[in-house]
Length: 85
Image (cartoon, rainbow, N blue to C red; front, side, top):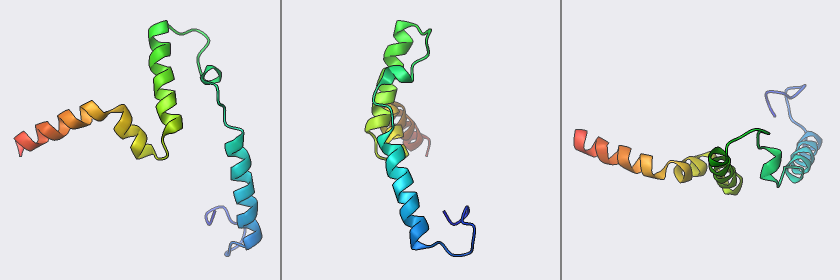
């Protein structure tokens, strides 16, 4: 907000407007994965993409999403790093 503020200080009114805008946008988020799917996609790819979208939608943080999606790879990399060190 500070970067886009038209003046030096951010007012309480601007904060309340931004909160209202964000709440409205969050309520309008799609609940259907079909809205995000390409029209032509193989069944194999569709299943993977649905799972990724589900994890993204259920994660509160980007880091949480990454840990869920790449748990095995992260574990292998941390084990390999321990042997190298």
